[in-house]
Length: 194
Image 1 (cartoon, rainbow, N blue to C red):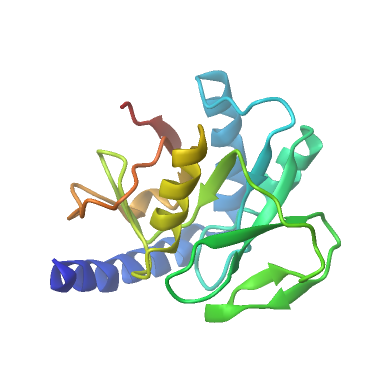
Image 2: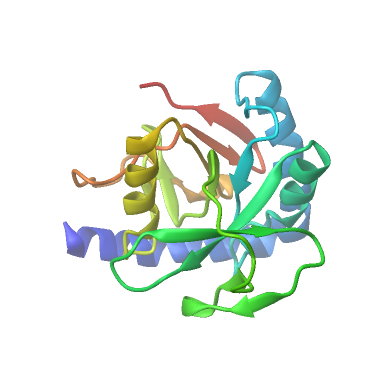
């Protein structure tokens, strides 16, 4: 299965690059629009929920506008911090204007003195997603392990965000792969039951 996922990751990276080239900046505004539509159709965050987003790298869909909208709607926002190999992601509070530090894998993370928090919802980056609500990540399992631990402690909403072109019919899955609750793209949103 590792070889299949490796081949899928290579194809997914190319699909994402092409989608970013074709829709980059416009996709961010469309993502916000479809998030708001999904909120009217069941993508409901608890009042004042703490939402973990991410700071986009390379050709990931840009969620910074969405993070601003969530803050305007009364939600606190956090960004992930990679604490080390095989560890869970940590989350630190972030507000617009806060300086970011260089993290592992080229990520931008909140400064070490930013408060550590536990999110009630996660906006999850990905390379590919399928019709069943599973995602293909970057291969290190950070989000799957973190979601599993958070869900063991209580309800946590996981929303994948991507370009629509990142959808595939089916992804290979392992027992530890965590299902998304929703996917939001520049072309629409979809809930996954179960």
